[in-house]
Length: 448
Image (tube, rainbow, N blue to C red):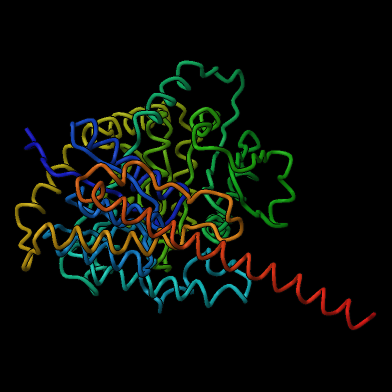
């Protein structure tokens, strides 16, 4: 049995979308199912300063460095707590941004800011105690900057598993011999990935008239697919909750990636597990993550070039029984290795090992750190004071900021500070109004 982790864990995210779901919400659920307290914050949320006193482990998911993050890390280290930089993409290597499909899609004017963000990711990484990631390939890349790197593989959420079960119960058997190849695109940056299998797909669709192509999400197929356009069905990007239902129309899942692209080599096996839970076999590019996850010919297939893609697809198209058997094997594999309970046990053990091994430097007294937090919050409260309308009361801070004794004692000081600033602002506005009236009066006198 996994030992109970007594520490409180806070996930801090600097990137939304599917990556936040898999790397923050899913592990948060995994820990909570084991009775471990786990919270979540946006990377720009000022409440992080109070959280620095309430949590023991800070997992910074794709968080670029800012003054606020620097203060959080400083306070955490002063308390002897540990911080982990967490990433599921190659977002910390400025020299490799040209391989990022998203970067390549940016307008020229936005590219420099993206590169600066990559440098800020690297700065956060270098200031954390550990690095946490999804694949062996990424772990190797991270070790060039950080010695203590660990892998925690992606997993499905309980809700996705439930929705997959529901979709399977309502699946309608197809009355004809059609075979649907499917590609689920999570973003607009996968055009080049898909083009790596375009020759194989066109060959298959020309040879087998019963084969159709289903695209879910954003993808530019180009003119090459025009001759088979009548057998292609596209659906715009959909919420993740709809993916199981929509994917159930697919017979063979496609997971192509650029082979000579380090950014693509960093990707995890999510496409395999999302199809596998539905009993759908996958043909995937031979990357580290898919090689780790897939037992070729048993739970799905791996392909390295056009010839291998055609070979794998033809095998599944021609043999419906094999197709079903491989899909069911994939489903069993996902249920055994990629559910919240299984991954939660592994993740909890990993964090427990961190806590056991962690040897902090000198730890400041709690009272010293509390005073620093109050000082930081005082500055923030000043920034939150609304300057445009002096009749409005100060913006209230979230009640969670006052849970602890030090904040209760410091509240009067913070409120008094806000009131003084508001009185000064009101006085300045009144003086400005008087000056304006005086100026108008003088102007009228001159005209007379």
